[in-house]
Length: 281
View: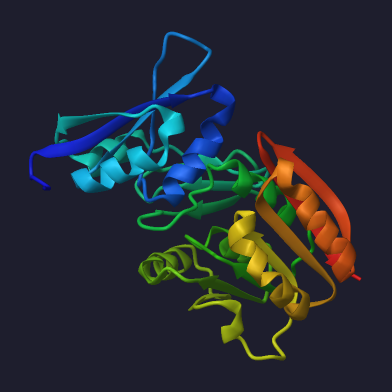
């Protein structure tokens, strides 16, 4: 039972090279924030998370035995204030920076793109390797006056980057209804007048909907059912940028490209993650 003066905490650990992956999986499972802890050894990374419900914490602990979680109860603190006090600007890629609304910051680069972004209930504040990879690739594209589809937009960060790079129309899709107010607020706060978000899957678009570029940050199991939609909705000669893929699974995507008539232009990796830019020939 939830109380007003107790947080339900779980402390775990993993190998340092697995921490990025652990962060991604735990947030996908519903963890709102993961705190990295100081440790006396370089052989592992310690971390913890908090929930307001004991059952929610225990379910996550049970789902991830590989992280060796130890549950405990802790006196409640002002979590919003704690997180705000520790929030800092994130250098996502060469040109792109993200800062929380309450942090004042001016990027050193003269051509920088600075986004003001608060994640709230949506995933994607710019600090994950997958976002950094695809953001860097987007910077190299000529998106001026182009139409862009952002599949699974989350906070809208990729849509906003496309907007700031000159796209004339950016449409983001999202199946989490609770994320839509956050997305709309982020678009408004960053003056992204050319960006919109729609609720639903890709079959909500008209059959003749076509885009100059499609971007997507999703793990393979989530993206895989949408392959045919991408083939249908990407214009000939258009770019498809995909991240959120484990490097160990990239051949699934490359085999699909070969079958569907896509030409791989560029690949990049960071930690366990792989990102690709391909065009439809």
